[in-house]
Length: 251
Length: 275
Image (cartoon, rainbow over all chains, first blue to last red; front, side, top):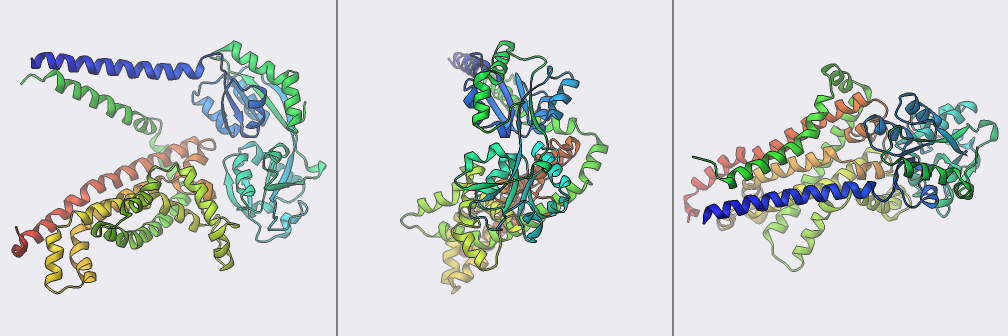
C-alpha cells in the first residue's frame, strides 16, 4: 500500500518536473516563435520602432549596455545603435553583420515647461550657478554627443553642474519632464512624446554633432528571415516615413 | 536504513533548488580574479559607492528603528478596527514594484509636488541628494523591520507585561524594561532584514534620487553603471554585495538565537509568572 503511494508520489514529481520543463520550453519558444525577431535597440528608438514593426520582441536600452549584453551572449536578431561606434565594434568582433546607417538625429536642451532655472539659450546653462543638469554617462551615445556639443562651444565646465548621471536618454527625459531637474541634453526626437511637460531649446548648428544610427543583423540570428524582414521594414518606404514623422533625419 | 523514494525525491528537489539559486552567485565569483576584485573594490567608484551606501543606510536604519519600533509595539499590543488595513499599508512596499515606489516618491517629494514644494519653501532640497536616497531606502526597507518587530512584540509573554503593570510600572516603563528587552532578538533580526533590503535598493533610488558618484550612487547603482563601463568593477562590487548581503541575512538568523538565552533566563528567574 505505502509502496504504491511512493511510486505514485515519484510519478507525480516526475510529471510535475516534466510539465514545468515543457512550460519553460514553451515560454522560450513563444519569445522566438511566429517570426518575431528579437530586436535590441537604442532607447531613443522606443517610440518609433514599434510603429514600423509591431511584430517584434523589443528590448530598449543604452546602445553601449546593449552591445555589452551582446558580448555577454544575449541572443538577438537585429541590433540598432544610436552611434556607429557600437555597431562597428560588434562587426569587427564578428558578432554582427555589416552595419547599415538608417537614420540621423540632432541634439536639443530640454527644460521643464515651468522652466525653473529660466533657461532661454544653451549659454544660460553656464550662467546658472545652482543649475540641476542631468546627463548620461560618457559611454552612452547621448552622453558622448553631449560632451561633443559642450566641447565645441567651450562649455565643458557646465558638466560640473550634473546632479545625476543617467543610464540612458529616457532617464534624462523622465527627470526633466517631472521637473526634478532643470535641464538635460536629449535628442530632438525625444521631445514630442513629452511635449506637454517639457520643451526644447535649440543647440546652434555649428555645435551639432553628427548623430548617425546604424543597424546590424546578428552574425548568427535565430531567425534570419525575420531579421531581414525587420531590416527591410526599417529601411523601406514605411520605415522612412515613420522615422521622418518622428523627426529623425535620413542618411 | 534505505532511503525511501519520497526522501530521495525531496533530496533531488532540494539539490535542484539550491543549484538554481547558487549558480548565478557562484558565476560572479568564477568570472572574477583576485586582482580584479582588489582593483575593483579599491576603485574610486566602488569606494565612493561604499561610503554613500553606508551613510544613507545608517541614517535610514536609525529612522526606521526610531519610528518603526513604537508603530510595531502599538500594532502588536492593541486590537482595534482597521488594524488589518493598517498592517497592509505598512507591508505594501514589500510587494510594490520598486519603480512604482520611485514614482510615488517623485509624485510626493518632487520639486513641484505637494510635499516637495513645502520642503523646498522651507529650504530643504530633497531632489538628487542623499536625503532622497535615505527616503527611498526607508520606503522599501521599513516593512521588513516593522513586520518582524510586530511579530517579536506579539511573542512577548503577556503575563510578563501584566506582571510589570501590577508591580507598578507604567506603560512606558513596561515597554522600555520588559517589552523591548524581550523582543530585542526579533527587533535585531528585523533590522538585519531591513538593512539587507536597503543594501540592494535600486529601482526607487535611481528614479527618485538619480545616480551621481559620491553623492547618490549606492553600490547597487554602481554595479549598474559599471556594467558597460568597466565590467570587472561591476563584478567586484557585485561580489562585495553578495558577501555583505549573505552576512547580514545570516546575522538575521543568528540574532534571535543569541538573545534567546537571555530572554528565557528572565522567564526562569521570574517564578511568580510561571504558569
